[in-house]
Length: 336
Ligand SMILES: Cc1cc2nc3c(=O)[nH]c(=O)nc-3n(C[C@H](O)[C@H](O)[C@H](O)COP(=O)(O)O)c2cc1C
Image 1 (cartoon, rainbow, N blue to C red):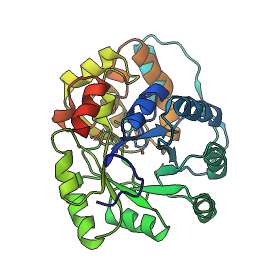
Image 2 (image 1 turned 180 degrees about the vertical axis):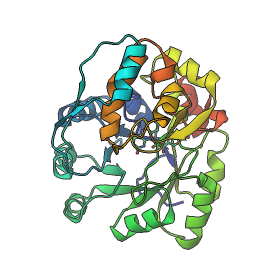
Image 3 (image 1 turned 135 degrees about the vertical axis):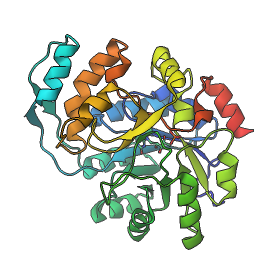
């Protein structure tokens, strides 16, 4: 195992965008010697800056943390007419809203990197793509470690070619969005298959294995050649995450996860529900993140009503992770 991040443990708490984790959560993880990641996805630059400042204020001296950003195509802010299928769902739920959706502008890599430099962030991971050459040059200049995300060997090789310091490989078991950026196909390769395949070809590249990793199997992945393991669902299903306790309980009893690309325009794993089925009947013709913004309002409303049928309940597929525990207990088990 190569410990390029000089962390106490070869374990990473996955970034989880969408109000799943909070600064106190990330700081507690980092202070334990596990590497915590701040999720920048869906946050404005100001919200991200506040998150970073709050985490830093709670960290022990010399404790590292990372920031994860989404790589997006340039996009101006935009107003889109709501599709009819969504208006029909709103009617069914007795939810009165406007007929248009506001899509925010994309945030440039430059703006993100300015913020990382301003706050002396030492590591950044990127999802849904890789940094452009100017960004790579700036990140290297400031000695910020760059972590790519790959769902197959082609994406892995792209990250290596563009000077990634380490690469997360994400298997099909992973909760949330698939990090794919070279094709729109669903990734059905398991984390173990991906790790074995890639490690054979690349014996010395730093690999972070992710997808379906739990307290019971994480050592297996380290033994198979992963330098680090990255866990999402296990952390999400702790009492201290920001998801409401009632939703966590629902996820735990549901167990049945599936991959769907209609809710946000990109394949993501979550609890199977009515929203996925309704949207499957329609031709959803917007890509991520536009489709994400189109369905955000109805999902938020459903969440406020505890209506599981119309939320997005992103979660991984390993049943070993389906139990609620304290963050302290999870950290204790992982660091023993
Ligand atoms: C609710 C949720 C949100 C996620 N958000 C992000 C994100 O913002 N950025 C990212 O790189 N990965 C994200 N992921 C994926 C994780 O990085 C990781 O690949 C996944 O959680 C690993 O699988 P596991 O959930 O079985 O541990 C998310 C996962 C979940 C469950």
